[in-house]
Length: 196
Image 1 (cartoon, rainbow, N blue to C red):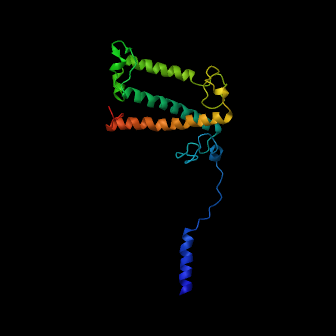
Image 2 (cartoon, one colour):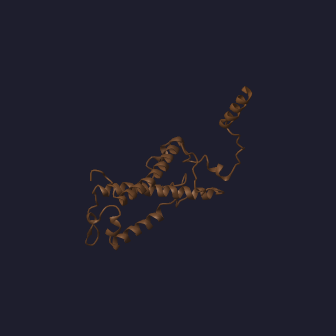
Image 3 (cartoon, rainbow, N blue to C red):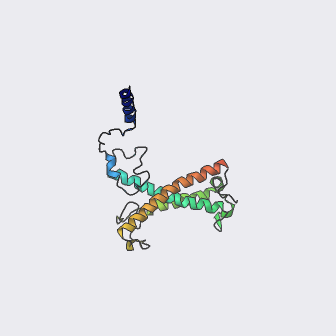
């Protein structure tokens, strides 16, 4: 009887023992697991499998798009909060329509006249033309200085540059989630700035 109980205890304890894992096969994803932006706690995170069997050129293109969307989202969050606080540019966006007449948030979509939308679209096209590495001098993906802007970047050591690039990437990721949350909250009727 004691041996049967002992055998049952050993068998049940083996359920909690770590399972033997087969050797992990190397995939194309392993090439990207040491890239900038692979950080704790998620590590390499590609839930949609966009980088499955991807080439380095594909990874660079996706990273450039991620940086661009992050930068736009950082500006969007700042603009959303500033206009929600009631701050507006002086003057007119078009003849007869003052910036102060444009509502904040989604109301601005219908509040901006067609001339204003023309200015916005023209400015976006202008930015698309100049905000790229046109000289080929970029140190890394997303380096759009083109030999004109520096702001002290060249004075940093390599570790500081890598840290600052990781900060920008993470802040861009957070801003993408932030602008989405601001838009959802507005549609749900939750005040953007509680005191207003």
